[in-house]
Length: 269
Ligand code: SF4
View (cartoon, rainbow, N blue to C red):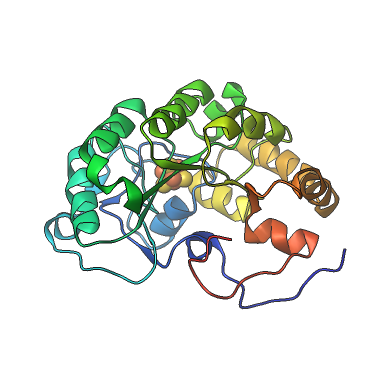
């Protein structure tokens, strides 16, 4: 398949949302591949060792008002929702919703947090789309790459909870952390109302060299993962799901298999 050149194609958060909101610097989940962590270290806001130990709440972002914005807001984008920040998270979420915003809630979810959001935001159900990140159905893989995040069954239970409460639900398998992403698709699909997104692991070597520079095991496993996610592999993956309208592809896969790559932010297609 011919690769479609497009240097202006949206990527990352821009593929899903027009705006982003965050209330914290640092994240307890401490994913080895985390782009937000690598940026915070590069610009001197955090170190590899304190990123997960001392997340700082942004009081200004929590205290201010939020007007209605055009297009969907992704919240959060550079931290997660945790039992430690759930009250502040909800304060801002409710302000966004009360102003009429549509919010994409992206998380490696924990049950108490998703339960609270479902309870507190029942009246705003139509403005919310949950997107739970699940890059593997294998707990040992999740534990290695995302040491502070819940295991597969826990994330699946969160998805079921949101689905059973009548919220719109989706899954992000970006980055895919092994070559058995079909297991994630099969197990989550019954509880997905919107889409399952597949995405290649991006800029992994750079992130690992900043986030965990002395971790040779991560470097080796990262190289193995990159070696598996070839254009041929991604094309085969695309072929196996191309007739399923609920499976969508991040820019990294669109580019590899030659799909149209949107230039407008927030289209979520
Ligand atoms: S959950 Fe997200 S923000 Fe937190 S460490 Fe992992 S990738 Fe980074």
